[in-house]
Length: 238
Image (tube, rainbow, N blue to C red):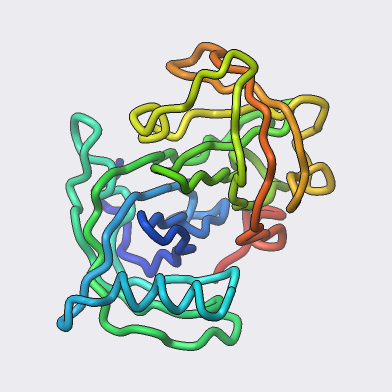
C-alpha cells in the first residue's frame, strides 16, 4: 500500500457477543475503498468494555452498534505475512450509527486486533459475481455473513446465521472461518433485492482456498446492517 495514504476515521460496524467482530463501513473512494473484517477485543480503563457492550446488546436488542475510531491508516491493518502492522487503535463505541443519531456508549475504547479475517482494496475494474456472494465468519455458536463488495453500485450487508449444516454432516471449523471464505447462494443474483433476509432458508457453496467445498443449508437470523447509498457510486464521502 502507498505510504502516503492519509489518516482517516474509518467507521466500523460492531457485531458478536462472545467474540467481537468489526466490519469497516466502506466507500468506493480513497481512503475508504477497502472491505475489512476484524476479530477484536474491546478494552477500557475499567476493563469491562466488552462486557458492557455485550450486555447492552442483549438488553436492548439493538441491531446496529458502531465504532468511530481515532484517525489511522487502514492499510496498516494489512502487514507482512498476513498479520497486521497496526494491532490496536482507540475510538468511541455507539449504540446505533455514530453518524445517524447513535448514542455514545463507551469512550475511549481500545480495540485489540486478534485476527484480520478479511482485507481487500477495491479494484478499479472489478466485475460483480453473478451469484449472490457473502463472506462467512464467526466462532463457536456465532456465525455471520457479510456481503462481498466489488464494484458500484453495490451494497454492504451483514446478517447472522441461525443454523448451518451440510448434507454430509460436516461442520465448518473455526479455523476455516478465521479466513472469511466466500459462499455463493444458490438461485440468487448479486443485487440488493435478492439479499438474504431474516428467516430465509437457503443453500450455498462455500469456497475454501479458492475451491468449492461444502454445500451448506443455511437458516438466517438477525439482520444487523444494510447500506446502499454510500456504495452507489465512487464519489460519496462521509
